[in-house]
Image (cartoon, rainbow, N blue to C red; front, side):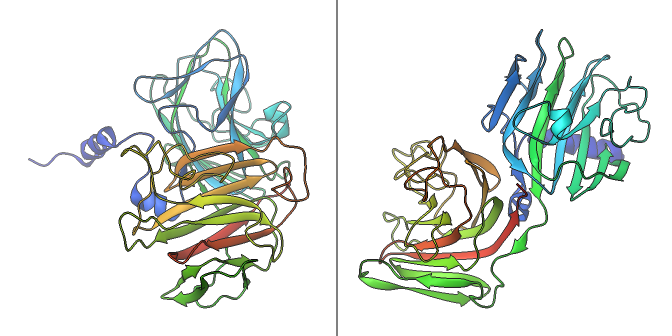
Length: 390
């Protein structure tokens, strides 16, 4: 007996892991905003209380109002989010909001409330009204939000309910709203950056330049383009963009080629470095080594760390396997994801300095790939970047 398609789809959805990405999603550049276990990468604003439910949902349920703000900011993206409210649920998702001030005024409020006379669920409150919908209470519903420049497309449970334009805010934080005594639950919060442009054409090192070490290496680094990838062996050395970048989302695929299982290649991606300066800027570490068979104990700060500043919370990557690294740089904040999973969330609280070694550097700088030592052997591919508006 064949089961109806609806039942098959429901069964597949029930068995799917929540708050995770498939390998395909990770390779396409999707990132998790919520890991299903903690509020890592988020900051509560106001007095509302946020907890993680036994089913992995993110729950707002207290006597005080407030919102939960993503520490990273984004510009153009597809955002997917599932929500569930009670019969009188009144909530929302903030888009492109500022760190301070009322988020619905500095950015946009995607409405979750059917009782509003003009801007019901799915609307951008006070900006663009959505088609009338009536999502049932106490059931999970799915938003898909596409924001590109001033163009917004909103889908609810797969149906397009809003398609419009507004220019108020071009970039900012994502937020989850809680209105007192109106329980709200969220899950499966995932985002794909859009409007990225290639930094590497897959054929040549056009747009890049080699920087020699300030002290002679034992074996000079060798940079080549092979099979659509940048391949580097030996070192020290550095391959640097000829352009300078300040606020951006950088995504790239990396493979560390280890010939000896006891020796883990050491490399990094430098951000906001000094032009032709050797190993300058903020280094996002690449080293897939950890202690005592425990991936939460990184060696030498660990892959995804801000080297010398903030260790990765989980070494998720392995040598001899490609992984996707996402780096979010805006102002003094840095976020890093490995295969879409959040591993580093760090704010540089130092006074402004001329270089990242001297203090917090927010000015534009070069992006560099590191060749660390004579054992270096790495591949880089699919290097792409989206610049974020101030």
